[in-house]
Structure formats: C-alpha cells, structure tokens
Image 1 (cartoon, rainbow, N blue to C red):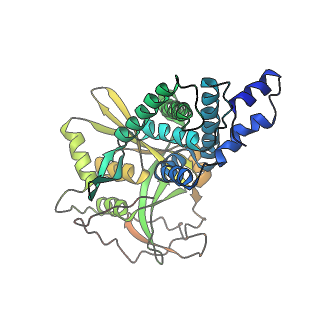
Image 2: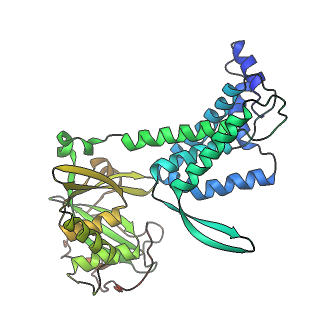
Image 3: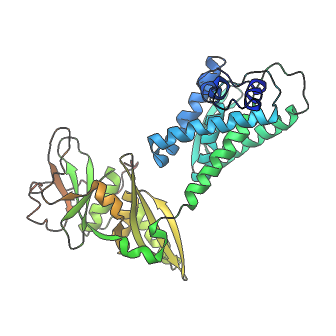
Amino acid sequence: MGVTPAELTSAWSRGAWVSRETATLVTHQFLHGGWLHLLGNLLYLWIFGNNIEDRLGRFRFLAFYLLGGIVAGLTQVAISPGSDIPTIGASGAIAATLGAYLVLFPRARITSLVFLGFFYQLINVPAVIVLAFWFVLQLIDGLASLGVTDVTGGVAFFAHIGGSVFGAGVALLLRRRRTAVDNPGMDDELIEMSVESVRVHMLSSRHVVILKEQGHERYLPIWIGPWEASAIAMRLQGLTPERPLTHDLFASALEAVEARVSRVIITDLTEETFHARLFVERDGHVGELDAWPSDALALAVRVGAPIFAMPSVLDRAALGADSSLADEDDGDPLERAAGGTVDPRLDVFREFINSLDVDPDAEGRTRS
C-alpha cells in the first residue's frame, strides 16, 4: 500500500501505467508509521487545512489534498528511483496545504506554545516565519540525506519539499486568476446593489445583512457576525461611537493617505461562504484586496463606495420579493435591526421591533 520507488519505476518501465503500483500513490497517504505520525499530521491539518478548504471549497480541497500527496510521492520517487523502502503517510499532502497557506495567508499569525525550561508561554508567531523555517529545515535535511546510501527508513524530506512547492504553486495560480471583475471592459456584467437593512434572527440571534439589487426586486442575504452587523447598523442609523471602530479607523487611514475605496464586489459563493473584493484607488493606481463581505460592506457604507455583485452569485443565492429569508430549518422569522423603509412588497419580513444593542467598547469579533 506504500509507494515503493523501485516497484513503481519498474512497473512504469514495462508500460503498466494503470497498476497496483500506481494506485499506491494514493493509498500511501492513508497509512502511517504510528500514532505520533498520524496525530502530528492531523494537528497540522487542523491548524492550516480549514483556511485552504474555505478558499477552495470541500471537493476542490479534497482534490488538491490528494493531488498534493501524489506529487509528493512522485518527488520522492524521482530522488530515489531505485529505493525499495516504501513511503507512507499524508505528510506530503499536508505539506501541500502548508505551501498554499504560506502564499494565501502570509500575514496570518499562529498561536504557538513555547517552552522556556520549566516555563511555557503562548505567543503569536507570523505564519510566514513558522512555515518558512519548516521548509528550510526540510531542504537542509533533504540535501544532507542525498549522500546517504545505507538508509533503512526515516523521513521522506523530498516528499515534503515536493508537496509544499506544489501547494505554493497552486496558491499562486489562484491569486493570479482573473475574473470578469478584473477586466474594466466587463464591468457591464456587474450588478449594482445597496444595503437594504441589517436583520437579526429572533430565536438564534444570528445576524444577516440584506443587499437589494438596484431597480429590481432581488435581495441577497448574507449571514454576518454580530460585531460587523453592529458596525453596519450604526452607520445606517447615523450613530457615531465615542471612539472609532475598526472600520472607522480603516476609513480614516485611507483618507489620511489620500486613497479611496472605489468599489466593493461580492465575487463568489463557495460552500455557503461568500467572498468579496475591495478595490482601493490612489494616484491612479488600483489595488485589489480579498475581504470578508461583512468587513467590505461595513467599510463601503462609511465611505459611500458603490457595491456590486457578480451575476453568478445572484443567480445562486438571490431571493425574489416573494421568497422567504427565514431560516430554512425552522421557518423562524427575521426581525429588522437597521436600514431604510422596507418595500411593502417584502411581505416575507415582519415589521421590525428591535434594534441592535450597540456597544462600541465591547471587545472581540466573529465572522461568518
């Protein structure tokens, strides 16, 4: 079940491309040398994998994960084609996840447990430092192992290297992928939206921001966290906190450097997660930032930036005036939190009775 380089190269030299040996490129990822090996891989997957899965979606992440393991196995075979030592473990696939994380989330921080003798401390370490240090260690150990001929086992360092390079390469392609929003000639395809209101679910207390298509009766509900909901609702209600909120600070910082938010676009819906892009313009140059829709909308309502959505997003998630925005599971209604006058044709909503409890001094935040 493990990848044995000598057996795989022998099978392929005979033209047996579809064979048991080829299948081991997949099956070896589900075998481990012990509990420590398995739990170590699970820990890294738990820390880094969910962010990559959120970005790719479940099925694409599964394909990425398995393909990363295959590339990692082939890298080890290319380095030692005559080795008769089987390679097992999902470390190559995990390495692909780490490589993608390094490219997609370079500014993220990882809470790490650091031991100082008998004492320990939790510190936040930049992900780029942790992952770059790990990659350099793999490279050094891998190069050191090249001259060793009497190996009877150990760590497949080049599988780690091959997997991480593959993952980083895929992530770079994702970052450079162009959609209609990147082409000014395609702007006519975008659909302009406005923030109709912020609402709160009566029983679950979950918050949702409702975007309305300009000139049409289509509504796009996006579930958001309570702090982002408060930030949007305060602006819609014309309230000013005693001290600036995070989005107020961001807006002031942009104004201080003579930059402006030119537009916000809801670009994609992947596995029930909305994605948005924030376009910032300064001195004729436009920068594009990946953002949570809740943060992008909270900033847009502060600076008066236009809001757009891709037609594909509305086709998949928009509701007409006769559709219900209540929870699909229990049918409980949504109560109004903030916004302008509701179109009477939106009879699926009850008259609002509550407003958000806004506490500008509260700490913490959640996102959905």
